[in-house]
Amino acid sequence: MSTIKTETIPTIDHKPHAAFFRQSGWLMIATIAGGLLTFGVHFLSKCKSVNEAQYAAFGTLLTLVMTCVPTMPLQMIFAQQTALTMATGRERQLAKFIRLGARSLFVAWSVGALVVVVFLEKIVAGWHLPDATGLLVTLPLILVSLWMPMFGGVLQGRQDFFWMGWSQIIGGFGRVAGAAFLVLLLAFGATGMMAGALFGVAVAAAINIWRARDLWLLPPEKFDGRKITRQVVPLLFGFAACQFMFTADTLFAKAYFNDGQMAPYIAVGTLSRALLWLVLPLAAVMFPKLVHARAKSEKTNLFALVVFGTAVLAGGGALGLWITGPFLVKFMSKASFVPEAVQLLPWYAGAMIPLALANVMVNDLLARERYGVVPWMVLLAIGYGFALPWMLNHNPGKIEIVLQTLGAFNLLLFGVCAWFAWGNKAQSPKLEV
Image (cartoon, rainbow, N blue to C red; front, side, top):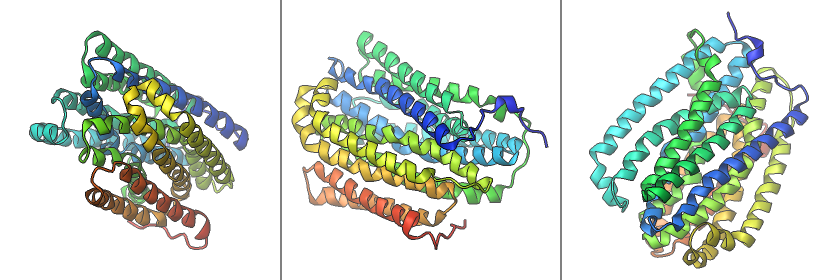
C-alpha cells in the first residue's frame, strides 16, 4: 500500500507535554487573534446604516449558520479519521473518505438551499428580517462553513496546528475587512456584514483545502464503510448535541423578543461565547493526540492537564467579563445596550463555564471511543429544545430565563460527562450502530 512521503506530514513531537503546550499555546493565540478580528465586525453596529433591526438580523443569520452547520461534528469526525488513518498507514482510504464527504455536503446543502428559496418569504417574515438579501448571502456562507471545518479537521487530525491557526487569523481579517468595506463605504447594513463573513470563511476554507491537498489528491482506495460508520456516528450526534447547547439560544429568543431586546442579547452572547473559544484550543490539540495514542496503544495523561487548564481559563475569563463587560458592550456597540447587558452578562458567562468543561470531557470520551455518553447527551439536548420554549411561554417578557435554562442544562451536561469520564470508568460500554 502506498503512503504519503514522510516529509509532507508534520512531525509528531515525542515529548508530548512540551509539544502540547507549544501547539495549544499557538492555537490559543491564533484563536484569540482570529476571534478579535471577527469580533471587530460587531463594531460596525455603531454605523448609521446598521440600526437595531439590522444588527438583530445579523445576529440571527449568524446564529443560523452556527446552529444549522454541524461545525463541531464535521471537524471532529475528520480529525478522528485523519489521526486514525495516519497512525495505521491508510492515507489512500482517507482520500476517498474526504472526497465523499465534500460531495455529500454539497448535495445536502443544495437540497437545503432549495427549501430556503421556496419558503423565502415565510422565513423572512417569521424571523423579522429587513429583507431577503441577507438570507440569500447566508446560503453560500453555509456551504463554505461546511467545507471549512471538514478540511480543518484534516489539519487537526494530522496535527498541522500551525496552518490551522493561520487560517483562523487570515479568515478573521478577511471577514472584518470585507464587512467594513461593504458597510462603511456602501452602507449595506446586515447584508454587508454577512457578505464579509462569507469572504472571511471562504478564505479560511481555501487555506485548509490547499494545506490538505496532498491527502485528498491521493489515488483513492476503498474503505470499510461499516467500521467507519460505527466510529463517526457517535461523534456526529455527540458533538452536534454540544453545538446545539452552544448556539441554539439566540434562535429561540429571536422568536419571543423584539429587535430592541435582541440587540443587547446578541452583544452579550458574542462576549460570553468568547470564553468557550478561548479554551477550545486545549481540547482541539488534545483530541488527535488521544486518538493517535489509542491507535498505537500508548498511555497519556493529557486529559487531567486540559481539564485543569480549561477550568482556570474559563473561570478567570468569566470573572474578568463580569467586571469589564459593561465597558466592552459600550465600546463594541451602543451605550443604550449597557443596562440590559449588565443584567444578562453574569447569566450568559456563567452558563459557558460548565459547557467548556463538558466539551473537554466529551473530547476525551469520544477520542477513546467510550460512546456510552452519547445517548445521554442527545437526550439532554432534546430536553433543552423542549424546555426552553416552555419556559419562555410561562415567563413572558423575561429574556434572562433563556440563559437560566441554558445554564441549568449545561450543568446537567457537565454532570453526565463527569460521571462517564470519572465515575463510570469500570463500565464504559461502546455505542453500537
